[in-house]
Length: 117
Length: 109
View 1 (cartoon, chains in turn cyan, brown):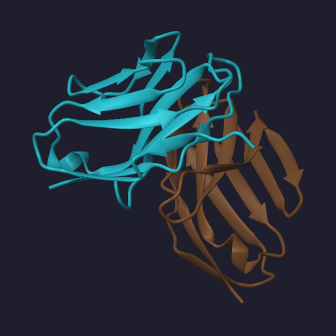
View 2: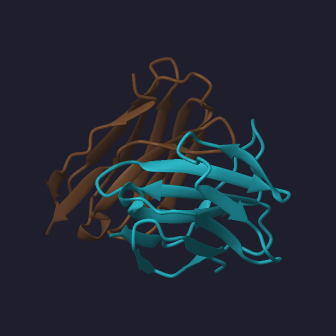
């Protein structure tokens, strides 16, 4: 069964450093998402991406964050200068559809646990 | 008022019990209502989805949506220890998902 994969499973970094979290979405999916979950809190939407551009982003997704689809298979989230409060689980998701007024089943990856020291 | 509210529990029930999990929401634009299951340190996994109001059944699981009350439920019949997980409600108008806090369920043998 196809699945979303994410690497690394755990990333430890120092405050102020740049990190890149990687995801391989399901191969025929067209819409890609990043969510995060701070320990003990809700899963929160960060950004959605379609046709090589951001289609929607939350207020969390500020200038420190960027996303990219560098090739036909990977989807990355970059945090330019990490802060302590960026420590969270980051989930990548993908869906076949994603437009408003249509159902889009989003398949989630296992997550990358980011720890900022 | 929060967009989606869900009692975080924890909820502990004996094996075989009927479990009722609920969420309320405030945004009347939501049309798609989902229940995800999440095991510790894993990604959410879709259990069921419902479009608009109504019921949907899948084995031991029943999802209900009442749009007039802005209230959704998930019922688990004959609960099993393997059902122990965190259950997340999620909603959408298409596009991004808005999640509830998640309810931690423990089914004791």
